[in-house]
Length: 242
Ligand code: CTP
Ligand code: MG
Image 1 (cartoon, rainbow, N blue to C red):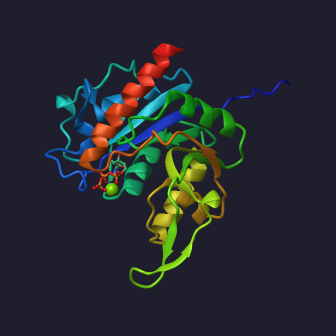
Image 2: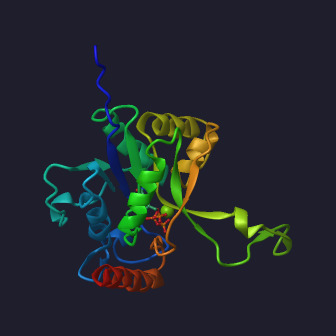
């Protein structure tokens, strides 16, 4: 008898339940305008336009008025979930939802709502590199600055080897069940996490580093909005020149 070989599905999970304290604006930064649309709409579009993504789980803050939101018509591929106190809690909530819908070995691409400049080519590259990987991994960018490790006070202890240090970006792509178990384990031990790869590291896995574009910034402070606009225009220009 022939056994069915099932390709694991790809899901996107977008944590968008933060308040944007460092931005200090009148609403969370993912709802701020960037060109003609909101930051969140730009981000969602990248995943909803991708033909390989089965569905997108959008994690929103408790107080967000969903009816007032201008969400794209995603043909049933967009699911809304309520977030938690920390980013990791929001991701755990999204994974809890996905666990009822997907298969344990499905891939989940976790991507910050605040990163609207992810180049679609980087998304494709990440998926292509990791599709058959036993662990999964994340997009990273090199540091162009020399990196110093602080010792006591404001004194340098030493200079880091820049060729071995990478800045963690998103998407971060892991198997649904493995990531869920890792995040639960880290939460149970009270380990603070700022990304998914840290949770996988916590349980002893070695996520793969996949170099991506430094244009994939996380909008954090007011000046980042201007930079993001420049990068989006640049990407648009490069696409039309192809
Ligand atoms: N996020 C989330 N749930 C939280 C906190 C953050 O879903 N409890 C999301 C944010 O909406 C953002 C992403 O995680 O898309 C990255 O977090 P960050 O850049 O730190 O956003 P904020 O927490 O909103 O900003 P700040 O830390 O300045 O308050
Ligand atoms: Mg935060």
